[in-house]
Image (tube, rainbow, N blue to C red; front, side, top):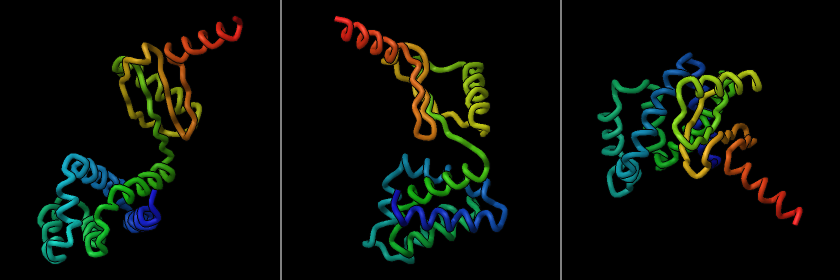
Length: 178
């Protein structure tokens, strides 16, 4: 993560927390960054120095006024004024990191061979919640190559209970016996 993203993302969180709008701004920032992921041309447009700064600020105002919290709108304009609008993704990462820490939320990246049922999701969420004492948010990925089972990555630790991993362990054990 860039130093800029850390400094500005944490500053945005402080502003949001001071106004008790951290959840609303987090939701707005999630929505904006998801939209920008799908439309990188907008980031290029707002970051382009070929377009007058006032015009870029006007584009931000038109697109987001009355759609996002005014503090977030001001933040986006500040990024534009500093010619750092492309850093919004790094600011978002830092904001979410702080938000999750303050609200006892842990993100778990879960990979399965087929999509999970709602019961499986809830079981994993509850088990990880008991283990960590935190509210668990699952980020799911489907990878048929693992053949079955579950791989979970959380807080830099990986729990791999997949068939693919078990087969690798068996193969390794058999080779060491030969």
